Image (cartoon, rainbow, N blue to C red):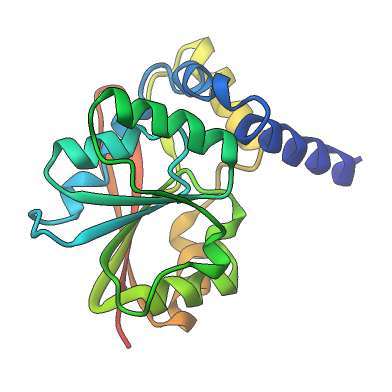
Amino acid sequence: MTEWWWRLVRFGFRLLYNELAFTYDAVSVIVSLGEWRRWQRATLEHLGQPDGRYILELAFGTGNLQLDLHAAGYRPIGLDQSAAMGRIARRKLQRAQAPARLARGRAQQLPFAAASFKAIVCTFPTDFILDARTLSEIHRVLTSDGFLVIVPNGRLLNSDAITRGLEWLYRVTGQRGDVRVDVGTYFRPFGFQIEIIEARCSRSVAQVIIARKSV
């Protein structure tokens, strides 16, 4: 039964990222009680001042953080495997008259030269972020002083019935866990030093992982 449940969960996420990508923004608002965009923007304060260099966003989704990065003065580039997400994100950026520097591809095989980016950001990634090939590729394309900023999830703080129900949903779909225990196990062997921060939002806390290239 457990195996079938996780197959169903993975199938549901696949639909959300592809055939049902047009529902992604609405779903994210509902399941976060409107906090999703605040969780995404928690990455911005850890990127330093814009210095003209490009910032890579892995799994850019519908392009919301691309818009935020552009508005904050950064020069974002996005990579996502989903063609449907790419179409949505490109339309958003074009409407905002922002550069649509978007590519379709996999994080396990980044189409960029070594030492191309000082910073990489990724919000709400699936299991690809812990793939050994992904971590090797991230390490390759970061500069010697480069770093990766991830928001794996956010946690709602209210104790009402709706919040409890949503937190239950996060747990049964595998989106909860002790990142302080797990993250270092995956990242340190690939040459990263880990810092974990909790960013307080209006009604929630966003978990932020900063992985700095160390070797």
